[in-house]
Length: 327
Image 1 (cartoon, helix red, strand yellow):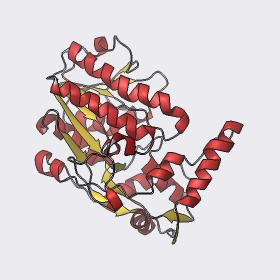
Image 2 (spheres, helix red, strand yellow; image 1 turned 90 degrees about the vertical axis):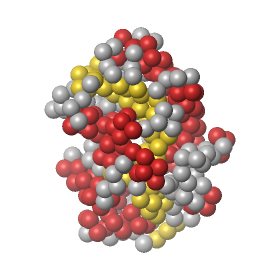
Image 3 (cartoon, one colour; image 1 turned 45 degrees about the vertical axis):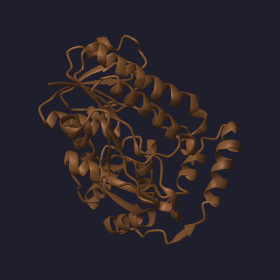
């Protein structure tokens, strides 16, 4: 069996590629010409260069049995609004049409819990919950919701598509890094004197990758599955990092208006003057509500693994340290 993977150079995608290879699939990975191929180094993967929005991309998919559409444009910067909608929505529309034309039997589409939204006051929600699109914070979340709608519509029309919604993955190979990886890095670099009182659902990135394969094997077309594990406050995550690294965790929480003010100055005033912003407004707005999720459906129907988070955290710390992210 041969799988076609988009986004295979990224954090989740590179782990999906590894899981496929371990399961004896042959893998073709679509990469952008400018992509960093470090996460695929040493792997037996056929690499094809191209773009999600290329109308002839189906030709590169010929001969493949399955599609894992993991690629997405991730940004919380407001200047990237148009690119987010183009890559995430139109890119998904184009790649799903290409999959049909190429004779792909089944697709696993990587959405995000961002598309689901958040419950009120830290309420834990599952796949049956949906925030109204106008209440989703930021264009990234809105673009992922609308891209997921594209996948659901295609499934309603008969295309075999399973949707997975990863929460916040943790582990090695977080090359960019992701927002969760950035939290770990700021902790390691001692750039986090205080924390915001928020929370997230975390999961080992390898469990996310296996969740993709389990979705291929057992998922129902048109259904979505939250790939998550443990709901933790940011304070609890930082305390776990402290235990792993023997570095002290910040003890002071700050009200969200303080980082929101910093972000507004950073993005609205300093950025137009040529300074690279470091704190996105939408990122702070997201942190104003805990983002807690219930992954029971994926555990029950797919057999999603629930590996201990402290192992994933240690893997992330070791990888960042050994790859020069921390001086």
